[in-house]
Structure formats: C-alpha cells, structure tokens
Length: 445
Image (tube, rainbow, N blue to C red; front, side, top):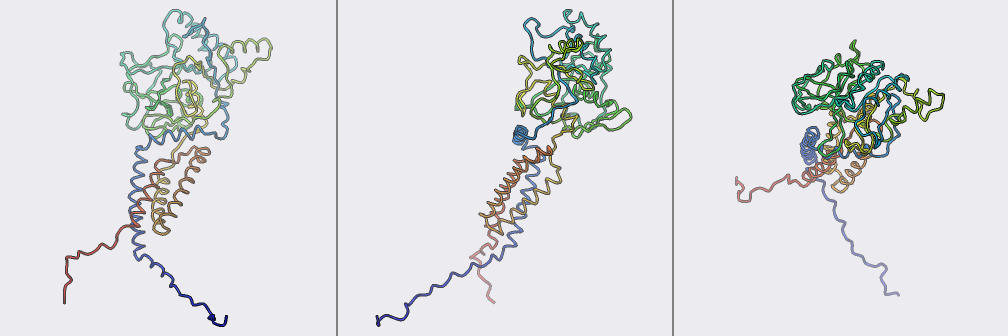
C-alpha cells in the first residue's frame, strides 16, 4: 500500500475548439431573402392566375363538406316539392294541376311564387286549361316563370318583358346562347321570366350558378336573379352588372339593395350548407289536402299560413328527375341548388377569397422569414418550424371558412413553404468564396 502513488496520473484531453461563426452569415441571409422573394412572387402569380384552381376547388368542397356550425334553414323561402310522379299521372302535368295548386296558395298571401320548371308544352292535353291558369296567375301577387336558353339560333325575338341588363366589362367569357324556350304567353303574359339553366363544371361538380347569360346581343338574367329581385323589391332595369366583380341590385329609386359577387362568367359561387335550405316544405300532392283541412277547421299536417310573405318555389325533387348534380354536400336536384343559391343571396352568405394585398403580405412574410430562419437556426429546426406553420395554416383555413366563409389557399401555401425551404438550403450551402484560378501566378513586386 505504501508503494501506491498519492494520485493517479491522468491525461488531459483538450476540448474541441468551438466552430468559428460563419463570417458570411449576413450575406447568406440576404441571398436567402432574395431567392425566397423571387419564389414568393412566382407563387403569387400562380395563385392569382388560377393555375392552381384545379387543386384548390376540391379542397374548398372538402371544407364545405365538413361538419360545421348548424345553419338555420331560411325563413324567407318555402318549397313545394314534386317528390313523386304517380304512374297514373305521367310527367309533364296538365296546367290544371298548377291552377289548383296556385289557387290553394294565393289565399295564404305568399310574397311571390316561382315555377322552376319550364311550362312550354303546346299539346292540347296541357293547353286546354291555360285560360284558367291565366286567371289564377293574374290573381296572385307575383308569379315568376322559367325559361331555358339554347345554343341553337332561332329567328324568334326575345319577349319584350325580358329587358337587357346594363353591364360593364368583357362579355367573351359569359355563356352565349342563340335562342330560348319561353313559357307560353297564354298564361305567362307580362309575368317576370328568368333562365333556369344550371351546368356542372368540367370535373362534373357544381359549385357556381350563372346569374346572367348572353342571348344574341342582350345580357339577360337567370331565374334565381329574377326571383331575388322579386323578393327584395329590386328593379333589374335600374340595376347594373360589372362582369368579374359583382351585380348591383338596386331599387327603382337607385337605392342599393344587394351586391352579388360574380366571376368573369357571371357566376355566383354557392355556399352549400347541410340540411333543408328552407324551414317550410311540403309535397305537391299534400298542399290541396292541407288547404281543404284548413277550410274545414281541421289541423293540417303543415300550416299553409306560414308561407305568408315567403317566396314559394315549385320544382321537381323526385328520384326520377334526370338533372341531378354533384355538389359538396351530395347529389341535389336543380330546384334544390337554386334554393341554396337564393339563400346565399338573401342571407349574403358569400364565399370570398382572402383580399389579394393581405395574402401577398402574408406570403412575403412567410417566404422571406422562413428562408432567413434556415440560415439562422439551421435546416433541421427550420424544417420543424415550417411543418408547424403548415399545420397552423390548415387549421386556420378550416376555422376561417367556418366562421367567415373566407378561403385561405392551401396548394399555393404548401408550394410557398416547399420553395422557401429549397431556397434557404441553396443559400446555406452556396459557395460565397469561389477558388481562384490556380493557373494564374501571383504578381511579384
């Protein structure tokens, strides 16, 4: 024990000297910011030009299909649905059926009545009751009829009651038609008329409803636009259209009643919501029964008094209806789509993109800041930060759409983050001190 040393000899290992800071960091941050600025501008151009629309549209549909806050059905509209075509009463029906229906409704003072189907049959089986139908239409407060525009030319002129709308802008993108099938003048008379054409988009989904059409050299209104003007008390001759921006519905004295946002094709994006679009709905066959029960002091299944001051739509919803369209909330008939559009207009429940200046400012902030973060905190930490930012943007896109119907773009934002990360990596590993040409000999003094 006495031979043991007092302390065990140890060998000191020198600590690794810290890596010197990158003397070119400021230059790399500036380079990253410049590259990211170029990428951000490219992303914004792709966003505003509509190139990414094919990816964005299904994502907007997905947001509309999510379970959102409950939407109350409209108390301004009502629907009488032709939900069943009996074998003994094949379609189309005689005008007698509509005469009886209309006579049952007008006693309960609806604000107006809209026939969504085009009543243009000239066969004697249908026209024999046109005079009766005409008398009932004259007694009603207001009846709106549907027309259908066609691409084939026709020598028949546009009826005098269909006035051309005042408009501004380029009409080349607006659907052009050469003729139309109008409701018969034997009962329609001077009643307001609107085109009921509904068309799906190239991917067979329906997202927008046209509010105006070009017929010859006239800009005419749709059935929905005519019905909205009828309900709101607007005068279409005093209203004006700015294509690519909005339709301004005005009263006869010029007072603005509604501003309807439209695209360059004159279409309104519909805010689809789950549930019945109207708070009062009845089957066509039951209305006469309800009226008879009320007249005899029997409590009806549906109280017809509740249609007072409402706009009542009559249209087909039966499964045999061939015109059914795929929407964000499932398959809908034409009249159900038009009611969704009417609710969008009356409640001003419009779907809107984020204002371009705000979107551009956000993209510039994210792009330049993200690229600089890669230089400052390193690629790994910056990647984690960008992933968190992408998740936050996705949650914000869902929440903002639910609360305010504002669209936060998703494809372009992911494109921005991916490009920002690549630009940051390029700046981080860019050789800012290129080697001199060794073949050049130094000058000797």
